[in-house]
Amino acid sequence: MRGDVLCIVAAVAFTAGRAQADADEGAKKAAKIFGDALVAGSAALMMPILPEHGKVHLSLARLGPEEGRFSANQVVAVFRDFLASGKITSFEIQRCESDAASSALAHGRAIIVDRQGRGGRIGLHLGFEPEGARWVLREVKESAE
Image (cartoon, rainbow, N blue to C red; front, top):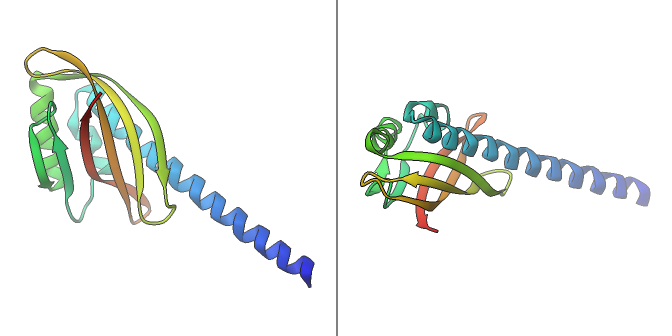
């Protein structure tokens, strides 16, 4: 009987570990879509990770300035506006973490040329939540690097 209990515990731990890895990988893929869209200069490419329901909180300084909650189409418009006169030259995911069920965070670094033509590096902190079978963007916070 003790062996059966250990097998069950091991199976539960393996399943939980797999769910954690899947969630981390899903959030990492979503963060990559976000970064790739900005580097490509096409905010519309982030539509697959934007929510169908609810809003996305944006807290942007050099990429904005914007602070507030925005629908998917508004998020695209905010980034499209930045990309009309600014540029993201690179985006790198630094780390990704999740609780495997309800939320995930990705921390990245971007090199930008802002609307005034000044280059620099910024941190981007992305919050994700599951919506159906996919991770969707729920928050973007910009920080100085």
